Length: 103
Image (cartoon, rainbow, N blue to C red; front, side, top):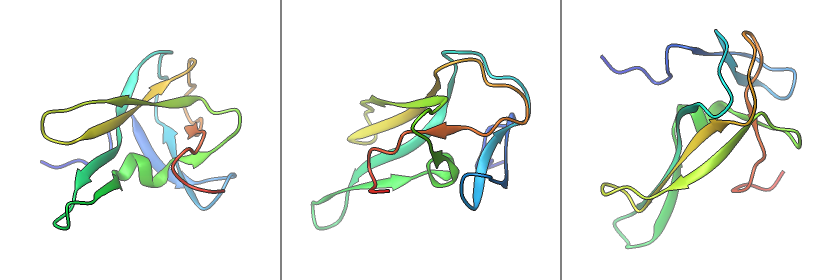
C-alpha cells in the first residue's frame, strides 16, 4: 500500500507557515528520514526538481533540524534525502534550510 509519509511522521498545522511535518516519535541524529526531492529530465530534455510529500510539507528555518543530502540514483538524475541534524523530539516540527526556493 502506498504511504506518502513514513509512519513516524505526520502533517499538522505549523507555527512556521501553513502545514508542516511533525515527528510522531523521536528521531535520532543522523537518521535518514526519506526522499524530499527528485531531479528528472522532462519530455523536453530539461531537468526539473520535483518535491515528494516530505519536500512539499517541510518548512524553512535558519536553525533547521534536518538537512538535504544529495545522492545519485540509477532511476533519476539526482535525489535528495532529509537527514536529522540532531535528535528530534516527538511532536517537534521538522524544518530545513531552503536552498531550491527564494524565501
